[in-house]
Image (cartoon, rainbow, N blue to C red; front, top):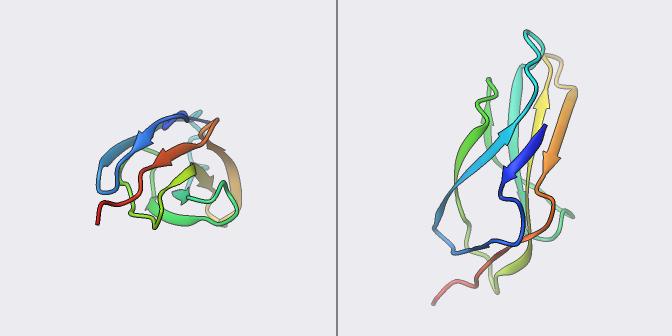
Length: 103
């Protein structure tokens, strides 16, 4: 599995819609679910931003508004089997930034 967008180094604005893209090997009958998670603190904490029963390789994500912004953004894609056990996962190779909200 490999996350392509975001790759890292991007600068996003709160409220912007970003297509998250990844590729993963086909495992017929094994993948029962996919979840996409966001971390704004370099991977210390994660928030689920999308879930699906099939691995489409795509999710349209709305960039959140974070007090003060961040330079430590990560997206992680995780695949699970029917028992809920992790099959594989990947995240962007380098952090991306989210600008501070305009008040």
